[in-house]
Image (cartoon, rainbow, N blue to C red; front, side, top):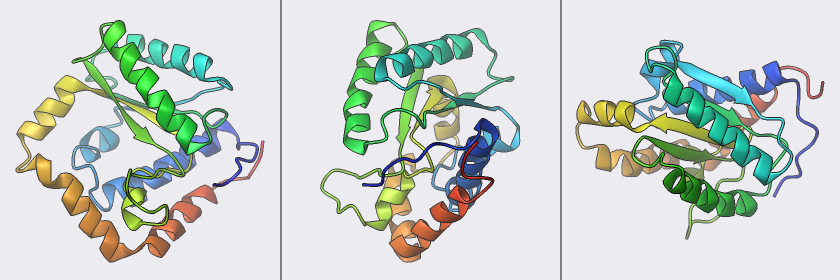
Length: 195
């Protein structure tokens, strides 16, 4: 597990995250539904100043309210980047249960879902260095807030969406873990290291 050094400036954090979305998620078509909102400029990037899980949860609530109050034609999705909190993947993974509980308790379930991305992402039962983990590895910890309606529309136009995870595993196994590490490293090198 890597120690998180002081994060870069906000614009650099966003640029590194956008690099990863472009060079990994979109280029390898890991999420076939990502290209349209990305290329249409409908993705909102928020760099959270939160340094505690409770503060991040409050910020996530604000983003959910923002999306609820904003037309999908203006902002389809939010990429909530949180470089100051939950750097440990297992703490982050535990936090996702809190996120799910909050979505249910606050009435967001069925309207929004939160996808999980982390620099040390590891699927259960998979070794830490397996290539398939890179489907969810990102330069910084991220909570990606998705509108259920938009996702349902995208899935309706896609043949066999249930096969996407298997296809992604095959794609990344062909690429290999070392190649995926290099792509992530290249994105992390964008801009100055620190503010």
